[in-house]
Image (cartoon, rainbow, N blue to C red; front, side):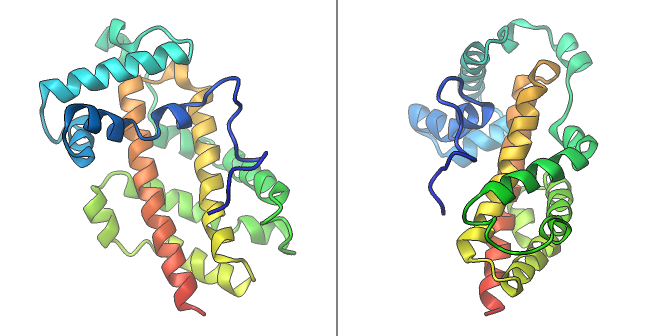
Length: 222
């Protein structure tokens, strides 16, 4: 995978939700001496653990503070529900914006922009991948891994035929992640922090599995 460059790195002056949320479950798991997958299941509501739930609330409050927001713990659940948006809704409502931003990042990336293809051809497989991700977010990681993930598989085969490198293929998924996290960051005030971290985790898990599937089909096409 490429090292962070000027196009994909987060500003050192202000951390984005992507940087603050990344590895949160792992950090809590290490602190409590449990498995990260258990923390994930508690966050999803599949399991109950007062200790893990308390650690999650504390971590979310700290993230709210770093992002300059009032603590989500202090806001009533009714207010949360009335102003909360889901990540899947944001993605669906901003498909055109995500495509345009993704294209700009791709063309500016020195490892991707040197592939001589038309903008429409470059972006063609991306929205299907994102739409597949949104659908996959409804399922467990086990179910997603067992799914065909046809859009990701087609993406991998297409990029192999177009002359992209395996790392270039992986970087395209990194740019999808960047676009979606930036979108979430701009809409923080409309979102419940605990719901958002669940959505971002599910989004990331689905995207990781899509990346694996795309890479498998890319390599199989050689």
